[in-house]
Length: 298
Image (cartoon, rainbow, N blue to C red; front, side, top):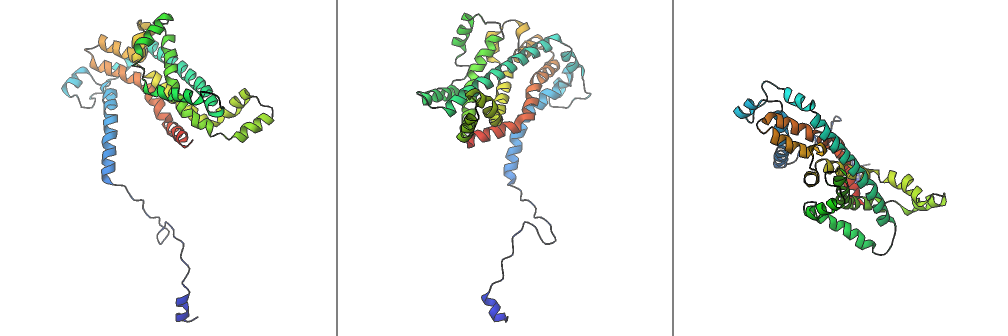
């Protein structure tokens, strides 16, 4: 083939690859430095107070007074040791654990059942019921605290952990329903029809198929419910009166008032009080993002 003839037949295009000559991959492009700077600023603003509280528990009052932003020198472990030896701390820890676990269990189970009905069945006032749960997101607990206290008082649940658990379940349901309904709608109807043909009842289909398939959403709402219940302060403040029934947020306030002159010890107590929620959130943060992403896609 002559050179002139070859001009009429272009050579086949070479496949593009992300590698340079010699088999080396192209380096990834970094984003704008301004974006990284803004991200670091926001991260610093969020992390700095937590680090200050945690490190402050390893200092003495004189160190905090002399150098408020300094590092512990020397490190003092007695503040944390004294708090961990306190029966008051472990009693409040147990109360918080009971309230958080019971509230989470109630929110997940009831929310999953309600979401299943709203997502899979057609009935009158279905849209109104879903809108009612959506409207519940616009009414935080603080707005309803006065009439809620009256209801709790009439039920005889003042200074009782059940008086905290029941309202937390009620106010946690709107978020749970809004997240879980898209998950349950995305389950193909063919699966339910096949389960019905195999002889599965509605409850059997719910427990054997719906719950496993909606596990990412269930884990997400469970984590959000646990953290929200653990950190709840306003409701226990109104309902609980005896220190033996205090949860950790109330315990932090009482401890701060009792040891107002011992700043280092107060910081140690505060660090240990918020540690379970931080660890819980750090472990399951990827599941939270995955569950919310699935809810949006559904």
